[in-house]
Image (tube, rainbow, N blue to C red; front, side):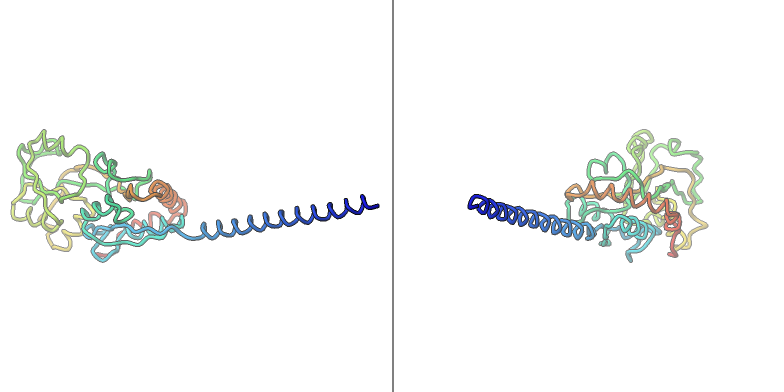
Length: 267
C-alpha cells in the first residue's frame, strides 16, 4: 500500500511538471507568433532621393509620374517610402554612400550596375533623342551620321546609353555638360551647340514652358532607356527591396492601375 501511494504521488508530480513545461512551451510559441505577426505587420520604411528637374516624372516640388508609381508599387508590398528632393547627381552620390536607401529614375547600364542594386522590372521605358534648332540644316539620318566634330550638349551626371562613348570616339564629338534642360535649350537657340541629347517627354515639358516649340525639333533617337529605382548597396535589405518593388509593379499591372499611373500630370 505504501508502494502504491508513493507511485501515485510520483505520477502526480511528474504529470504536474510535464503539464507546466507544455503550458510554458505553448505560451512561448504564442508569444513568438504574436511578435512575428506584429513584425510582419510593420512596413519597411525607406528614404529615396528624388531628382528635382525631370518632369513629368519628377519635379522640384516632389511630384510626378515616378513619385506616384513608386509610392503605389511599394505600398503593394508593405514598404513605406519617404523622399528627399535633390539634384540628380547629388541623389546618386547620396545613394552610393548610403545616406539614403536609393534614388530613382536611374538607367540600368554598365556604369550604374556597378554602383547600385536593381530589380528586374523597370518603372517605365523612355526614349532620348538628338534635338536641333530648326535653323540647323544637318542632313544626318541617325546618330552615326552626325558630322565629325559636332558639339553635343548633355546634362552632367545623366546616363545616355552604353553606346555614347563609342559614338563620341567614332564621330569625334565634343561634349558640353550643363546642369539643366533649360541651359541645353538655350544653347541650342543661340547656336552654341550643334545638338542636345534630351529625353523626349522631359524635353517636351521644357520646350512648352519656354515657348520655343517652333524653334526646336527632335530628329533621331539616341537610345531607349529602362528606368529603375537604384538601391544603395549599403542597405542590408537592398536585394529584398528590389524583389518587393518588382512584385509591386507586377501587381499594379495585374490590377490595371499601372497604365493610369503613367499618365502625365499637368506641368
